[in-house]
Length: 123
Image (cartoon, rainbow, N blue to C red; front, side, top):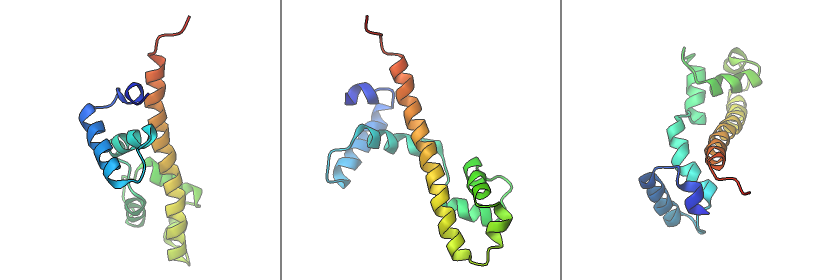
């Protein structure tokens, strides 16, 4: 099962991820955790802290996920001018992390879906 669901990924990246996960976790890594370890860095999604800094600095080129999180919280102007900036930062981080996690999950599922579509159909 591991081989079948990981063979679309670069072997060296999977090998390094498995070594790291085995060394740092108490249980053997799941397929999902290995895929996340390999795929997530390739997505180049900003962290919550990077998203917050981009929003506060009014960066012209903010990532789509940052703009979506800001829109869900009433817009970047409302975030920047909040009367409770620390509470707003914490709320923004929670909203952004949820959106980011969903984007990573979608990327993980897309790879598995693509692989499944290549499997021969049972007759």
